[in-house]
Image 1: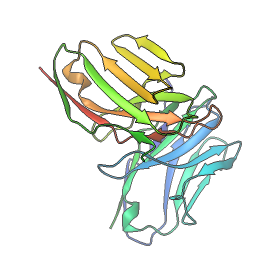
Image 2: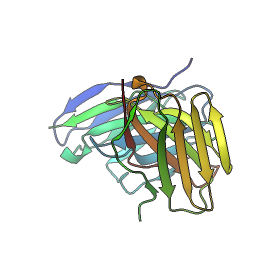
Image 3: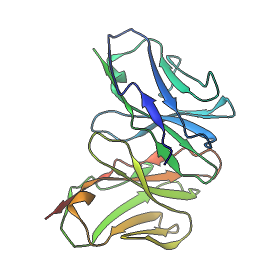
Length: 112
Length: 112
């Protein structure tokens, strides 16, 4: 069964460094998302991406964040200058027009 | 008022019993409703989706939706220790871009 794959599974970085999280969505998915989950808290929407552009973003998704789909398959989330409060699990998800979202295994980001 | 509310639990049930998980949402125009299961340290896994008022059954799981009361529930029959996890209710206000809003989740503990 196809699945959403994410890399890296865990990244440790210093505050102020740039981080790129990568995702390979399921091929027939049309909509792509990044969510994050701070330890012990709820899953929060960051951004949705459709037809090679951002369709919606949350207030969390400020100028430090960006998303790209550089080669038509990979889907990336970049954090330009990480802060301590960016430490979280970041989930990539994909879906079709049916409404159901399928999540990758997540990338754990630890900012020191 | 929170967009999606769930009792954080834990909800403790003995093996073989019925577990009943509840969720309320604030946005009346919400159209799509989902239950995800999340094991500790893992990503959300889709269990059920429901779009119309009434019940929807899938194996041991039954989702119930009452849009007038803005209420969604999940029943798990014949609960197993392997069902012990956090159950996340997620709501989407339209059927276009699938931005899901998650509740904080209810932790379910099934004792042998």
